[in-house]
Length: 146
Image (tube, rainbow, N blue to C red; front, side, top):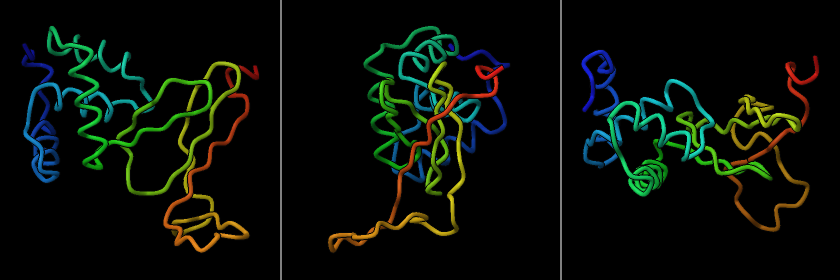
C-alpha cells in the first residue's frame, strides 16, 4: 500500500497527466511517473525495484506494461544507448539529446544543439520531412575522469 508520506501534492498533477493522455489512473502508473520525475534515465528493473518500495508489490510485467503505455501516450521517452538496457525518462517533447559515460554508463541530458527541432539537419534527407533528431554523445564523466 502507498504510505501517507509517499503521497505528495503533485500526485494530483500526475493523475491529471494520465487522464489527459486518455489513461486510467492506477497506483503503478502513478508510482512509475513519480519515480521518473524524481530521477530520469532508469531501466525497467530499476523502476520495478522503486515501485515495489512504494507499493509493496508489483510484477515486472506490470511495470513493462506501464512503461509501454506511458511511452505510447507521450508521457515518457525511451532511449537505447548502445550497450545499455533501454532507459526511460519523463522529459519529453523538447528534442533534447544525451551524453553517456563510456566508463560507468552515466547518462545526462544535453539540450538541443541549435534552437528548434530538428536541431541537426542532414546533408541529404532523401525526401524525408524531418521533425526530430536524436543524438547520443559519448565521453567520460567528471567522476570517472578524476
